Image (tube, rainbow, N blue to C red; front, side, top):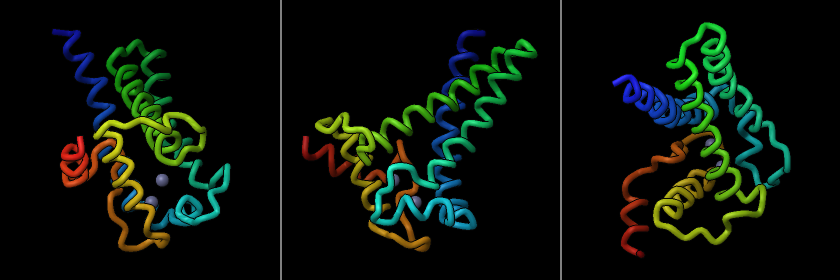
Length: 153
Ligand SMILES: [Zn+2]
Ligand SMILES: [Zn+2]
């Protein structure tokens, strides 16, 4: 039973972050923190973006959970923090490498799930302004994109 709780805690940290990231993207990054997110939407495609600072912000809760878990001997806290960190890793792989090709890798990945994520995020990038954006999620996007890509398989 304890192992089930451990697995659940890890997965909970991971899945929760998709929703936290969605909310932060929609309400903070496209809100009062637009000044940091703006350069991710302009066409200059700078190598280092102000937007990258969000990765550091999201690393804080993960680092705190893991560090405090180690100090106080809480496996739950370590696993929750690891779930957050693992989400950050997948977000980076999908968003920064697969979609934006900041490192040229996974260029030819051709599976319906990844194609749907890329399409939804490209729709998000069509807007270069703060307002009226869509598709703020990363690993979970509106169902219509999954359906469209599944049909092509
Ligand atoms: Zn955005
Ligand atoms: Zn992007």
